[in-house]
Length: 324
Image 1 (cartoon, one colour):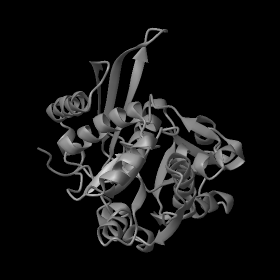
Image 2: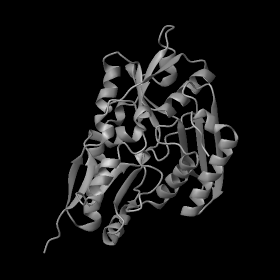
Image 3: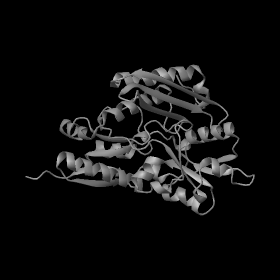
Image 4: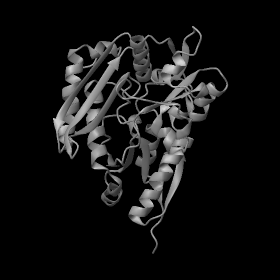
């Protein structure tokens, strides 16, 4: 008898449908089973409030998890940066596929880069839209240090809505995740890719998370075929940093783990982290390294170590809330 199709729970946005569709194809190849997408509306999709007001952590995830726990879907795909750092006891993070570009992308009028944009506004500040306090903090800090006249403007909405603010002249530019533009086939609309040397991404940015019920050992094992060990240890370190700072996904925290090499092989993992005030007037930005190969426990230890150093430098006060 033919096995029934696996039901993949996904948000309804164009980006979520695109990335879930890509995962569905990979699951079909790995398991030989058909996969059907089940669209689910989350609170984060329907609320017009800014993420800082609705408590960004989990607002795009809860409805998908509820559907999993009720048995309405077999597995779900999340943008990993939206996933709470505490794993749900009844769900398994079955796979973290290879990461897309983790950088932030600028979409600006007239094809301008960030530096060109700030120099082209005839004395007024360049208005740059973003819904992320993390991006605001780092963009404003970069502008301060380079003498650029920039005003960051809080916005919400999907990719079309955000880019529409630039097309209609309301904003000079918006900042989006490069991974999102790549996944929906619109990478060419980015006018500048922001270097991680001055804008660190959100922890887990560019990576996907595939969750399923922990009790379904067969499905956990099947989905594990999509897992990329290097991506998993990198995002584990980044999320351990975030958890140790006791910050949610809407906090002004950036982090990126990557491998350093000597030209022949990886020699160590580097983890960089940043916390700042949204006006860019104060940043705590530090890094640490650990040996390779990196185990799950090593990655967690690396994240906690860097968080401890950042807290000692005053990171808690910059997040606007107490962190322990």
